[in-house]
Length: 250
Image 1 (cartoon, rainbow, N blue to C red):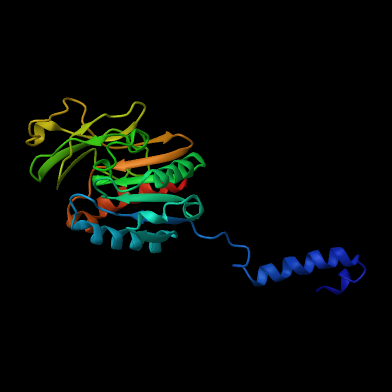
Image 2 (image 1 turned 30 degrees about the vertical axis):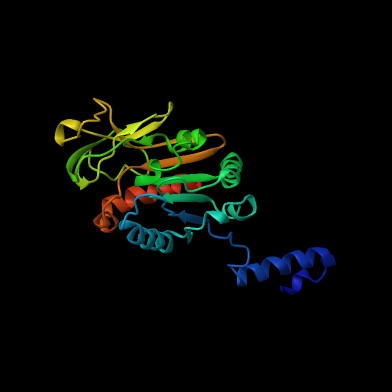
């Protein structure tokens, strides 16, 4: 310490010393990294791309300073366990994956300001849980064969879409939806004239990705991500990263 500080009161000298030590230890007061939980339990169809998707999200976390935990154990859905996470990511779960107590814990988590990101089959689960249907934004209602289609970006300012071309042509499994919630902020739609949409068409407005504030928390969803190839596509990965960041609250 500078000898000119010798005349300072002891408390003041302690403050100066503490500040000096913190300069020597820049990580001492660093905030912990945000943490996300990837949940991928399946009671119905199991997507082969889940394992690839988990690795891709882990890589995104390493590159973008957030931690990633993964589980298929619905028993971990308790208030005490979930509160450590900035966001919970539903990576293609299917069927009835949470019991009533686990559902209540997840509702409390969102109501306390938690985040949610749903990928692909996140709309193909919990059909009897209306709160979840509104959180994720819609329910799966069938799909045609995998094929190329044209996506049109409707929100150019969002972090999950601003890097995308206005007209984005790609191959995936294109979901049709029912029970679409009100108030969704639509990020992109699919041009049904650009592919064989099957019997369950949605018409001129067929959303495939959106976000919204819901019941105290934040929710993002993308229908993309059926194929394993999606998780090595830089455009899709940046889209997914933007959605995760929104769910985290960044």
